[in-house]
Length: 197
Image (tube, one colour):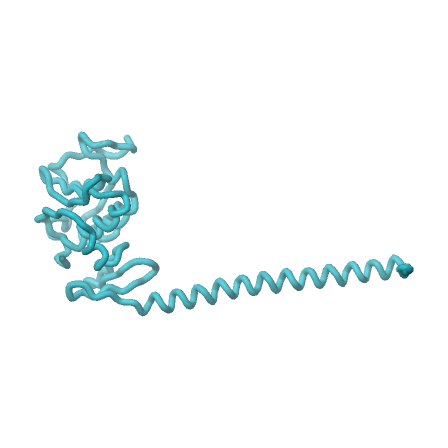
């Protein structure tokens, strides 16, 4: 079979046509990808907005991956489902309530779990004067620029432990637990000081 000879002009036209076809295919792939992501986001956000969890008479809504609770004008954020938090095997010996922290500076030492610090910051910070990171005298401290506090200050210590427990010692509150349970233990602490549990 003999191949037909093409002129330079015909080759250029064919090359341009092929480029246009390839460009059209790439644009279509990009558009379908964007629409797919937007559509998936709409579906997932629509379904998560309608989910609620009732725990001890309080209604928690799900929003952006958090369990939220309206308390007056404030919105409290919890990382874990309160039902799942309730199921964590733990020991709790806690007498402090949110009024203990209200209007005061609260120091948090959280070497092992920054997410737990963020959760306390977001929730306790609503009624405290401020929440600030700190190191506790006698405890490990990674950031030497943080202030060193003692248990005579309002200190919450969050750290890894083999046993899940929340307790008070020399006026400090210790939230200890397995690495996978620390965020749930922080939620437990918050639920308790808020009187939800």
